[in-house]
Image 1: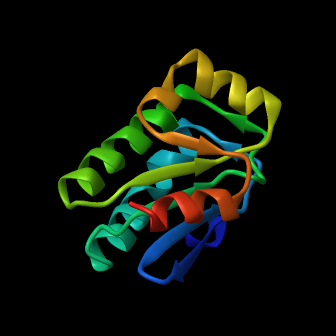
Image 2 (image 1 turned 180 degrees about the vertical axis):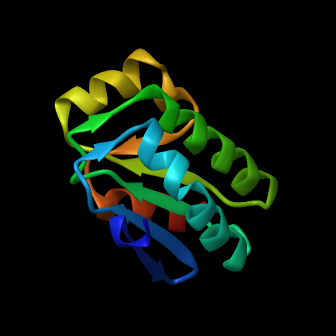
Amino acid sequence: MSDHYELIDSDGLLVIKVLIDTLDFYEISESANFLRTALKERSFPSVAWDLTAVEFIDSSVFGFFIETRNVITKNGSETAIVCRNKEVLNIIFMLKINEIIRVFPSLEAALQYLRSR
């Protein structure tokens, strides 16, 4: 599953770039341990989840995002989501994820936000 993500360390922040177009229960179940380990090895830095390539996402993925966000927050860091896909954004807003995790249209904007925290 590690080939489905690109992990980019950027000035103490971590960008998790999703490289596949479908992010669903099966995918997150298969890759959750890999992603949790990546966060733990880096001492839970601020994270930007880059969903630019994602065209389909289901609600189970947001459960994982909230779980990791809670651990990251307890360690004094922040979480952001980068997304431009209208269908994915509709799900984010319908589930009110944007009230828990900030959502940005570009990676640059997300990183600027995370660096300012």
